[in-house]
Length: 350
Ligand code: NDP
Figure 1 (spheres, rainbow, N blue to C red):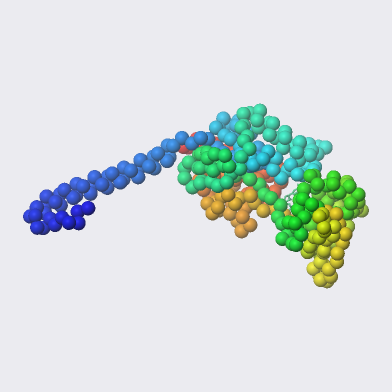
Figure 2 (cartoon, rainbow, N blue to C red; figure 1 turned 90 degrees about the horizontal axis):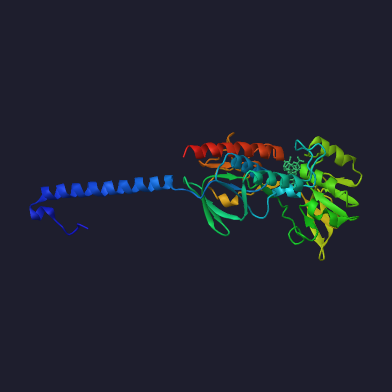
């Protein structure tokens, strides 16, 4: 701006020094004022909500119940309808308060009803992305963009895939991860189930209500599932265990007709006729929309402290999406109560 101006040649260098010092001070002050103003505006900006809960499984609904009772301005977002993974759990018998057991669908329906009774609003919308780094978090949904001072991530986890030939081709045509949804289609048929954890064992037992035979294919010779489930499965004569075995392919014309299984110890491969194939080899966290903003463990689960705080201030996590040694409905609701309590305290400090 002043590049053509030579103060030495005008003989008024002192005046120029003084003027430029004043000018620089004004510019610096202006800059500083702008930075401070911008910061204040960001801090003071009124967000649409105190708290946005993302996910409507047991964790999300419990956080919603606590937040609504704490009189926070809160909304719960769920892609379709509240429920999460529990919706596809046929029978829950380890959640306290239901001595006879309860279906997963009934349990989450009751949880949603209870939270709504205290004023929780639940909206069906999908979170596409979120900018959560600043004091006001921006959440981009399918239909609109909303802002919040705090977020509880309760997006849960989804079933993992094997990545074998036929798995995708026959998904919905015999390949499934939901016994509650698809089990009844296999009345008096033969089905296979893969996995050795609680899900595979519990759901295989459920499948025996319909199927005449269930091959339970497990890669080791010992089940990971909890004792009571192990005992029940081993005593069930409709379940045939294929130990030390992995499913290598699924074949058929329009629907599943046969599976191929390889014994990992002998390397022997055999084909077995089967009408369906359920894959229960664990879960992966639904945390992709977070990008790299929040600290996650090696498997992608969100890392929190004991107050459910993530690495980003104002962002909390609860339930299966969290890095935790035990994923149960009981642990999810415990996480969620703490997360809502922490969010309430965070909002109070703003
Ligand atoms: P888990 O991670 O507990 O078990 C996964 C199973 O799949 C393991 O047996 C594992 O084998 C096997 N597996 C993993 N990868 C492969 C692969 N590539 N090929 C073949 N087999 C594989 O997952 P679940 O879904 O069973 O359970 C998830 C969480 O939910 C757990 O914390 C569980 O306790 C909980 N849950 C609780 C229930 C309840 O309380 N009633 C019901 C259902 C789930 P390996 O053992 O060799 O690692």
